Amino acid sequence: MITILPIIFLLLAGGGLFVLQRFNRGAGTIWLVGVLANFAVWIVVLLFHWFQPGGLTFPHWRTGTAEIADAIIFSWTDLAWPYAIALVTFASAILITAPVRFDQGSTPTSWSMVLFFNAAGLFGLTANSPLAVVLAWMVLDLVELFFLISNSARGILRNEMFTSLAVRLGGTVLLIAAMAFSFKDGSSLAFSNLSSIGALLVLSAAVARMGVLPLNAPQLPELDTHRGLTSILRMGAQLTALLPLARIENISLDAAWLPLLTTITIIVTFYGALLWLSAEDELAGRSYWFLAAGGVTLLAVLRGSPQLSIVWGVMMVLGGGAVFLYSYRPAWAIFLPILSVLGMAGLPFSPTSAGWAAFPNSFGWNIIISAILILLIIGSIRHVMRPVEAPSGIENWGKASYIFGISLMIVAQALIAVIGLQEMMQVGRWPYSLLVLIVSGLITFGMVRFNLRQVLYAERNTWLRIVFRRVGAWLNAIFKLNWFFRLLNFVFKGVQQLILVLENILEGQGGVLWALLLLTLLLTIVVQGVGI
Image (cartoon, rainbow, N blue to C red; front, side, top):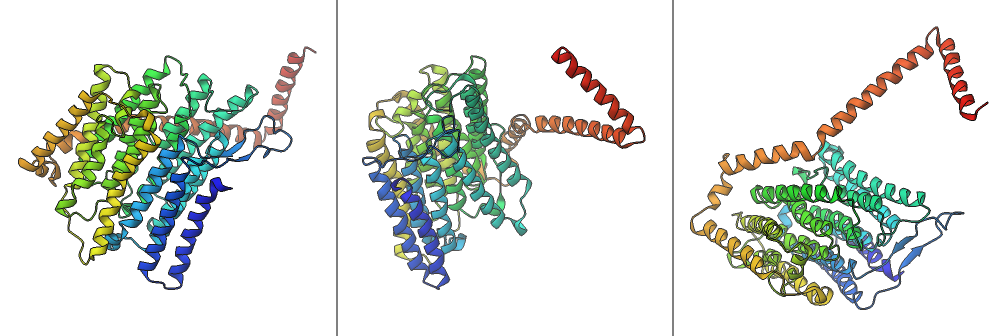
């Protein structure tokens, strides 16, 4: 019961904020209750690193066949803890920085939703068996469906929303298929011991839910005003897809599949990084950040380092989170989100220093990862340097709270590295880390000194935007698999027409004769089969 106590507490706290709002309590009181409630969960999750509670297990959920049924297990593990503390930290940052976003949809209702989404994400991170992961994914999909419907125009799901949910549901079906193959072999599916086909299906399930293949980075303009809500919802979905991969002890894929998946992931990761760099702002490019940063995490898994992939997953949350929440922009505070995202460079003994070890130590791989990180860092710096109209009427306590919330994500990176990833911290590949830092610094200097920002922010179609748009359109045409879906639609329509023809024949005047003929053919096949 202690395992899910933080989740239950968040749900009750979210409901409590609704009640307080119903009774017309002041926004300041509701905000303070929400911040304290989430911070209490943050303390509990932090303590779970040293005092892990016993798991919550449902071993006999399937009557009469418990010996072959997957157990439903929810528990806190060393692998889940970095993701959990990162997610709760980001939720705290959303609430703490909320006072500067009152004119951007930050309301008591949105604060309640942050607590609910945080609870849903933690529920997915505590899922420690395949069937528990399936249940957690379904819960997250239902939560997202409710959120999208409640925020879309006239409550109607747009094509982008439907496609996004359908792709994620397809990933869930693939994980169920992996469980079915294990049942066929007379055993239950375990992430720690996967067969070749099981590993391929689990990996494909995670890839689909992350939006890597089919390419799924929906742009939802009506939700872009939600800096915190949409971000934490997407982060929960990404982390719950990545965590099962970190539990895999050995990726046993066929030799033909591994190079293909690696190549596709590299291309899609570059695609996401380039579109993150060229996006209009950090909210419009948010999906591409998840695509690119999640792609780096997935590459670590494909190259045989599932546990080290956690390093990059944490940076996806905390590095990107600081950029997404950077809405109030005093000139002296710009170093905070930049410092947060620079952690991706992986300098010696930094939180991501061990992340480089997830990839082969070859010139080609080092350059690929360096290029991706440079694009992500430069894109982040470009977005935080974007001039915006400063919100008015912010009191001093609100400004102080905002700075504390952004700083919290920087502190959390160091805390996770020292406490949760201490054994992984190392010198790393410092020449390439330094290369990432220097190149990023030079380009940033060029933005400021030579006014390169005007090139990137130009309203008209500059050559850079044209190149990105054409490359993006080409990759979209391939990796969104629309051509494959159109082919399936053609096949299904052909089968449908065939069935209609047979239906008309059987219901026509000669239907009885055709039925007798088919029955005779069926009996002939059965008789020959049994040898009568």
